[in-house]
Picture 1: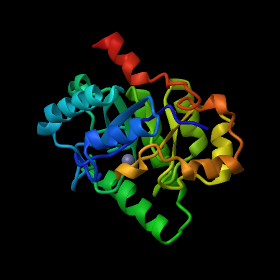
Picture 2: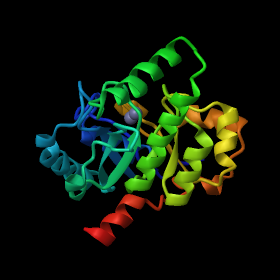
Picture 3: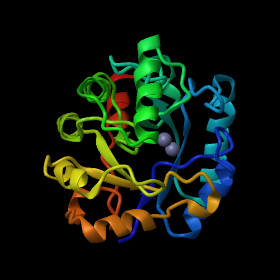
Picture 4: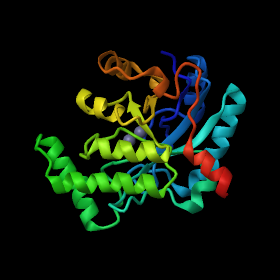
Length: 258
Ligand SMILES: [Zn+2]
Ligand SMILES: [Zn+2]
């Protein structure tokens, strides 16, 4: 299995170790046809991408693309901020980005106290102490994911269920219906094999990403390779392998609306 593009990599614009150019050079070196730089969203409290750095990020991606000869997309891994599905990529910023990923993260400027309480405190406590999550918490997270997929042209949900709990089948069905990918994340195990089988059976489409925070991990899929040796996912359901490129929703949305 050969990756066509890695659409989830971090740089020093958030808390990755490498520069945009270093990630791009690594992508080129290992034979990827394209790469996205997707640093953490603006409302990540410690190391989220800062608005004033967008022009430099765009310039860096352009320069890296020129030097490597492969497309280097400007992306972000937006944070899910409340049950209504709000993310921290605002529409006024769409013009500056090519790739729109979304995921649940911990140290985020959540919209209301109850969002902080559910998405951060309750998810963290239940994960840390291996407590079976309550139905209300699962409902809350599921609503947040689904509302976000419905409201925004999200390309992919990153590491679904990592340090959080949702009804993965319901989220996958929404993703399938709206053309959002479920990411198979090679940095962390985020779905059990049983959950992944259920997600697969919805018919949703996948991309594989490294979620690299260091240059050497760009394009690394080892963890996902192992999962795919146990869970049978038809190769034609994964859109960034075997020379194929994803049909990203955000790009289509921008072409139509901006
Ligand atoms: Zn993430
Ligand atoms: Zn990430």
